[in-house]
Image (cartoon, rainbow, N blue to C red; front, side):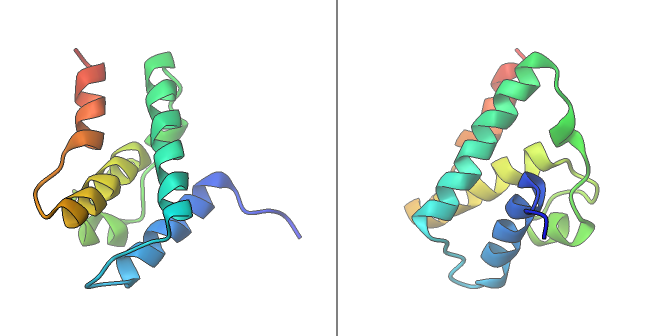
Length: 104
């Protein structure tokens, strides 16, 4: 049996988080996996590597209020922001802001 690809693991973690509605919580280990992926995405973005620019499934985009066809870089960052916002009980944009800062 083949091991799951990194993208499939990330997708499964996000799916689990979405299905945990309304609490939408994950284990710290799974949150750390998403954070590691986010920081890898930032490094890839700065180097011009476009593997994370593939489209996320439309239903995931809809569930987190992104345009259908959003890329995985944005999906992971948005999910992390939503998790942090839920935990802090205020709107957090730390992770999506990372990509905005890279563009400047």
